[in-house]
Image (cartoon, rainbow, N blue to C red):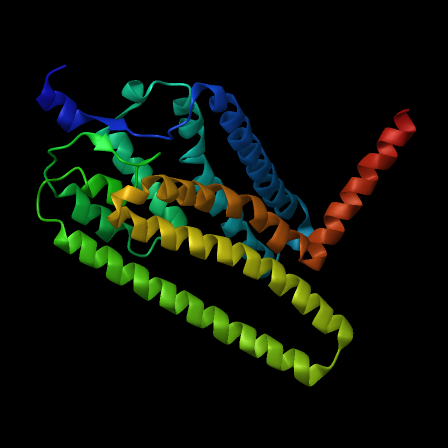
Length: 273
């Protein structure tokens, strides 16, 4: 394969730096995370689709979250687990596949600027062939270019900072209002429910916020590449596994349906034996 063909069509994914002794353990952990996340999210979608009592706008809105989580997890984990057992020099991916993966990676994070961001990247010429990440994303793609990427960097930083500030501000305002209602109502049951729900949500949000911030800003500091890789993987595996628990089980109607189905299956098993 000549260098021109290699540079233009085939890329090398850096992947995770895992020793052969640790590769099976890492694979098992990622596999368990993937199975748990897929099972929870697919189960939530099936439950909402099957139960007519859950066919309300609020519950259909819940379906968007597991669908997004399924996409965000599936777009990177299967290939990442496959690459663990490959030699670093054998982790190839075509440029087209890499762009498609980067597109869906950013659809998972935020859809509003994905087309513009990927468009700014694919216009660049490429002089490198190594993706310095466990998977393809926009920052890894434009690092393949020797052109001036100031526009890409500026757009990415400005949008990321703006999105993070808006997100934190909206969450802060929302929780201030929730706290205000709890103080005014003085209803212990309501306050307990609010604290329980908000506490779980804040935990998931902080994991996403910190992982995303680390992933974005450490792309500018190659010496911290391993920390960035860990943050990027956490961003794609932890929230998809926790979201169905936080947003599904915390919803009274969904929780009651799950408990009802669990007891029904348990009674059937008892009758059989």
